[in-house]
Image 1 (cartoon, rainbow, N blue to C red):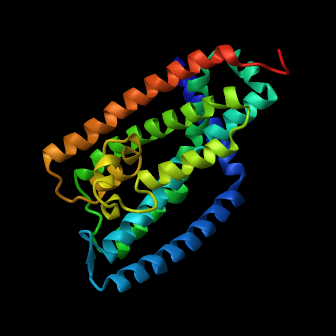
Image 2: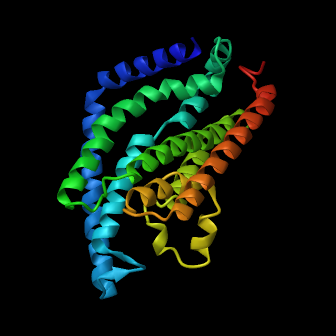
Length: 267
């Protein structure tokens, strides 16, 4: 019965997303321009390096990674922080807390419809094009199953981080600067803008102990590895699972404590 309520929110989210098709088109055009810039930037980097392989990755490997990372980002991107900030600032949060559903669950399932539409309109077309153009660079095997499992955990982890940051608005009543800082940190340390293979040691090692690499780098490393070692695969998925549980518990506890600090119009 509870799942039915959640799926109702998913359906409503899908319908809302489909009402704003122009936004999807603008996003697609913006991504195309971004990828053109990425192509020429990394082409210049490899040309200046004077080698076909840099840090164990060829230009083709790097470009495929970044194209899929961009598609994955567009698929998993959520505006939880902005939504929480607006609700807290306007006082709308009080009405949402009165709903017969935990606020954290309500907010996630409200965005679940957007995940569905983003998957079919952004990630899946990009994935198919990359698979066709690269003639098998993306291996179609058992790694796809592990990739799906990894993406599900990445979505959960990404949401927990966003919810944790959004909760800070209870104290600051302004979230713009904090959210911009969060986005920069996550995009950099997750491998979404620069593959982690290009990070210098020991910075590269440090990033593997942080939760951010489990959002984009972990799923992509599984997807692009045609024959992953079982031990390496278990470490990647196990690390993701630990961070999912840890950040979910931390965000819930922080929200529970912060609820006592919520004030509306000075009340």
